[in-house]
Image (cartoon, rainbow, N blue to C red):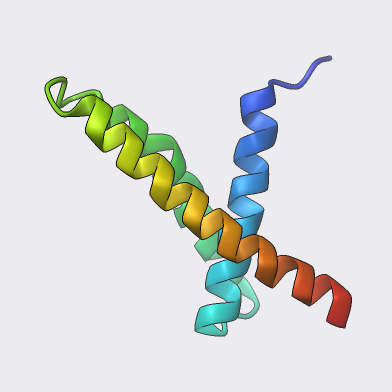
Length: 86
């Protein structure tokens, strides 16, 4: 069985972005799982919505990538801090 690279990246993005929201909003317990679920839904469905606007798709796609990478970078910092402290 081989894992798709995009699936692995999506999992990494979900972990990092969920860690960001967990740290910034002080989420605990089931709220963290709900945050991960919402993050996953958004990560998977926004690209499908972007395709619906072909004229602006390239601009919206670039904007979406910037938002995802920004939240992932911030979440990665929070995730590493959490691992080091606990």
